[in-house]
Length: 86
Image 1 (cartoon, rainbow, N blue to C red):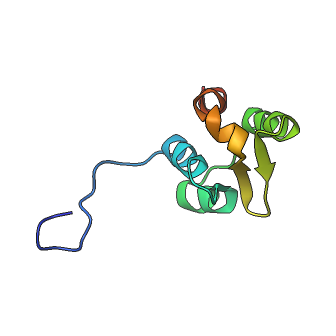
Image 2 (cartoon, one colour):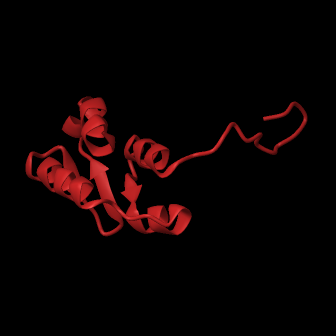
Image 3 (cartoon, one colour):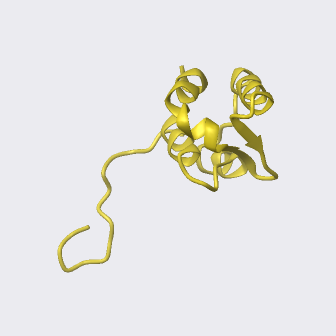
């Protein structure tokens, strides 16, 4: 923020990968419709398979909006993100 202003100052561009990473760090998780609307992309087949594996292992939950990490998933989120975005 600029002093005396309530307007945010852009700090660079956010890519779809950045968005996925940042959203999964939030309790609300990743909204796949918002991902598509904002960036024009959907999760890849590889990413969908990874999320299925994470859900099966109790590291993520599928929600009506997309995916969120469980408490266990948040503890190992860097490894999960490396698989999703690698």
